[in-house]
Image (tube, rainbow, N blue to C red; front, side):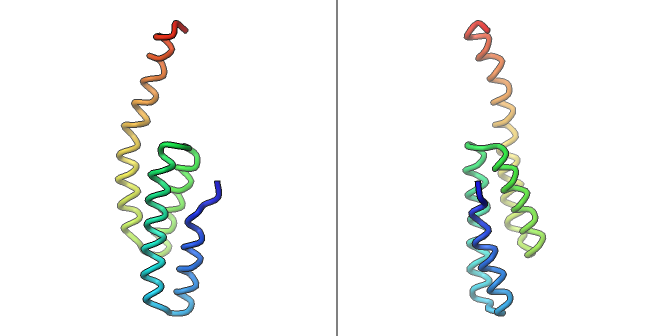
Length: 100
């Protein structure tokens, strides 16, 4: 899956080059929203894409000094760990239930 958030990063870079503070703020907010919402969606759909968006988000957080991204991604990570554990634990019990 192509990263849908890169478009906002590109717009943010253009605003930085143009020294446009209003657009910088607007595109930073859009970038944060995109990363957080995409990570939440990917938890349920695709583990590899989820990892990619989290790694991308952490890079963006450092590159543009946006601590909100890192904060939200850490919360999502904490929520994802119990879900991953539950999924791993439920698979063996499902196999027992079906007689495998």
